[in-house]
Length: 616
Image (cartoon, rainbow, N blue to C red):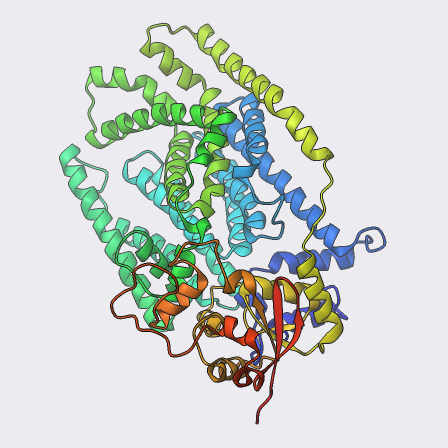
């Protein structure tokens, strides 16, 4: 965008891009969530800062500034929940000291989630304020507007927005069913989610993955089911439980029907790999699907490692979180039982009095939010950053909450309002002092370190490509490496890591045959069909040892191709020996059958680049 002659020309180049994927013109604004970069490029052109600040630093400082917004949003959410600024300070301190587990921004800056999560935190802060009782109509309208803007920006900046908001919608659905949130506000939140997502859909040129999202189907189903079952919140305990079960089943069936109908009508297959992955991950049958297995074998999509909890415990965060979670969960169960039973017995009401105070609507939402995102994080490590940041808010809120200390002191028959106030302030201050004493010196040492990127083999490869290949050359290779090739050299690619496109997934599987047991003629034919001029082979993939047998890329390709895997171990009975040796190993022997099609033009300890012969 910055290199374009004008903003209009830059936008045209993005909408009709033929320099990213070979033999294909794509609309980048439709396919990828890059509106934030477009906005920044326009801002960079308008502001008089070109002389003082390079584009990359403008980009980095903007993103780091956005992380400050993230921490402020966590601070505000915790303050709103507890009623004291001390809680917000503790949440911010926990977020910073646990940054290994709360953010990836310091080592992978341009991730979509680093753009999106600050807006998600702002949205949660706005929802927390919206769920307060006795709001003035003007306050409520302004807060709903803030929720909508934050939801829209969150959806615009991250392709996985729909799955995160689906979990949020489930939290609202559960609380609404248990009568813990005002139905009118929940309805507004459903509508905001749908409208925010649809607006993003329009901006992304009616992106099919958004139209076929489960979130739109689920929210529409809830609104329809609620109009069908109007007396959902009337009657005794058993009567209401029966209605609730029926309501849940109705919503589930409607969601699946609407989603199936939309996907059938629009012929959508953009997100099928995600559902294949989820099906295999949760044990609903093994799969040989290459895309699903590619996710299953990545550590980031595995279960949350246990050492995460030991790190979170070092700052006392995990201990406090579990303690507060237990108290709040007990209170929630009792309140839910009372709401469903509709009992007016004096004794029960007396028992519930303190629990009602501790579980205001905003606290109830925070509880269910943290439980659902906790389940997501435990099942998929990649998503832990959505949970751990809210863990800081939830734990600090509990530690600084008058209601929580009141409940604890009443349980041990030691309650006085003075004691509750003393504990509310003294325990958080002691915790802050402990964190400062233990972690401040380490943080200062880290800030004083000056580190340098060091990867000479990759740098050598990129410099060679820039110096020795034409600007129009097309490169094939692994997704991650080709992303670097595009950024460093501007060359055209056969494939790249944007996996939310069915054609690109199929293309990637074909390109990866360079690591499978295929003939040189087959591989050459595949690569040339995508206009490839050069192919880059990586020893780290060809001779991979990072993953165990069955999860190495070459194993996934062998199984998908129906071939027996390398090495000792079991193979499925229907797998057969391959007719050809592994391409990436055999090509290095310079046999005539390979040199006819491929000529080595570059080599170092890590990479081997071959130029393809252009046979007529």
